[in-house]
Length: 283
Image 1 (cartoon, rainbow, N blue to C red):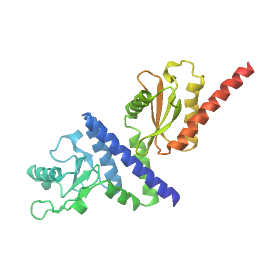
Image 2: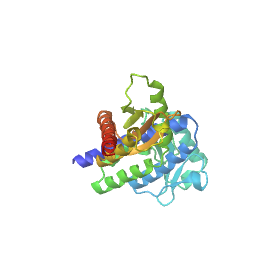
Image 3: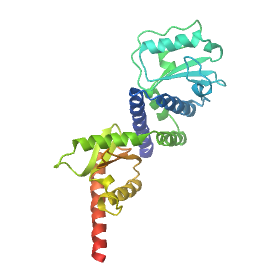
Image 4: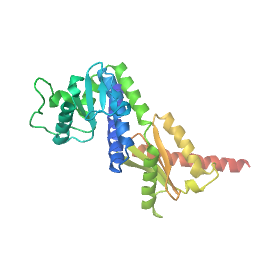
């Protein structure tokens, strides 16, 4: 029971990470964010509902919809916009471009949460579309995941791990490193961990890591030891990055336990120091 609950919590954390990533990619107008969202959504919805959705934007753009399953007659619009106007425009385009002749059902998949839509959405006569059934948001996804068998839950957990590993976390780690470096003062800790975002912790060192060539120096060796500790304790490293001046390093970890991770990095540093001392004594 505990393993199941833990996996669901980790999936929820990953959904939050995905939402955060896509919002930031969109904010600086990187178009690959749309492709990532569409491909990820197709795979997720296929696994949850046993569909066979394809990304229509990679096989030939169909206005107003992003994903299509010609076998099950299902079409999906993927969007981060949850305003009523966006959904109305999606429905209008669906009929204007006669997609209803090919697909029997239209879904809007929101990469966020639904708003309170007080009035039903208008469609052509006899075409079924309701907020409860045809607008899918993260809460609906979580509810669906919670109802899965343990076998299927494991498949979804594996899918999240696989897909999230494709994201460009390196830039996010570098961003965190530059932020921590800019806040660093003489009386600041030389290493530690801080909550970077929901479900993500930045483990860091303000110790000139990138300017030290000798990999056996404790300031560099501590990172190697930390990776071993993370693996042993089932933490997942998302990325590693340096500040622009190479003085500060950051390792983004898929966990919100900053206190425990702070203890780990300090322990790893002292282990690295002890290694160096023992080798010096031996000589």
